[in-house]
Length: 534
Image 1 (cartoon, rainbow, N blue to C red):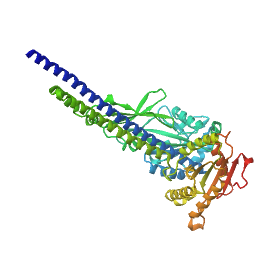
Image 2 (tube, helix red, strand yellow; image 1 turned 90 degrees about the horizontal axis):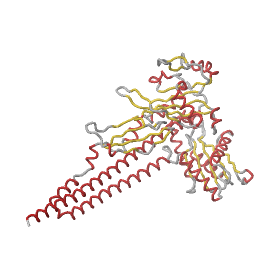
Image 3 (cartoon, helix red, strand yellow; image 1 turned 45 degrees about the vertical axis):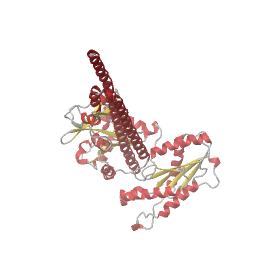
Image 4 (spheres, rainbow, N blue to C red; image 1 turned 180 degrees about the horizontal axis):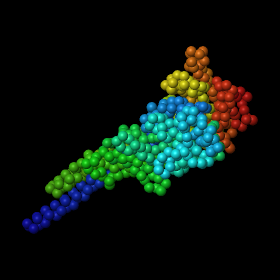
């Protein structure tokens, strides 16, 4: 009897130990999985925010390039004013440079002209000892003509960017493709520590070349911006992830090996939990591929883990009669964890929707940005071809905006742009019409299933004129006006997507050439023009 009771007790304890161990391990794994999911969501959310910040930087360069294109006689004061206006609003840009394209036969004349602005100006390069010397003979040069801030970067004045192989490769890629290219990470010297940074290059052309051959012959120079990775990281990440996750930013090179260019360590006292480390999806921008890796600290995991596994194990060994209750608690705890995961998932979806909306909007006017507009054009052309409909599109340019900014400043200019964009938006009656900011002072309107958009263009010009925005009260009663170029596609069966915008730009060019405050409308094919067309 004693042996039977003892055996029964031992068996009960062993069974209780076995099931308690299984229950405790099950809960432990569930909490570990929940923590892993939270880390993945935090890191992906941070990567999305970082990608958005990088794309904003690229848009800034495009906006500045548009201003440079409109400046025929670029001087140091012009460049510094435009560049510092951007740098003041975006502190992650530490320096901006303007590099011009110079052929070998033009070098002597170029140096002589530059010397009128900067004494003893010369195109230079680094020798093997790291000293600046006169650049050797080459077929073409890319010297730095202007730089701001000048005091911290005056040593790069006249430096030939094409003298360094890595920089030359980036220049050629950016030149021939006509897109921004970012260099691999470089070291930036600070007062107490070194930081990683990178240069972003954007080609500036004469006119608007469309093909590789056109770009090769129309190069004017390059706009360069120096970014500090830590500043971009702090702006994009500071409000998106918890302070107890160690983050590393990796730059993946051509050999598929990843170099750490920035790291944020939150706890030096205890090693992080490498088993829960997570690497985000690649962040692509300007020819680079970055990865964001997050590793939770021990405090992060401890805060998420509960004492339930240990409690369940002890209680299960002592009182096996409570197994049913303990299983109930396990299920309840699992439901609680799942509910937390669902809540986090819902929050992430809402955050992604907000980020997606922001990525489609223009920060100044609130209307759609150019990237979303180009996607809408491609989609609408395909739909129009499929359903055999009409399609109209117009591009609206605010006349003499650069002169207005020079006279009244960027703040007043931004206010004018917002007022005009609101006026155009109020003029568009149909919900299908899409208004987007196409450039610095340029808007584009996509009008699906519209047989003739010329009357709408007239209404937009009237609406802007009724604002009666004075250009300069001291010089007369001249008000701000717009020029409009548009196109109506009556047969899109064989039309390429990019040509729709090209027709509208061509019409805008005609309106500008006729003295501005005009509109020009084209119909494709021209034999099908409506009798009342613009």
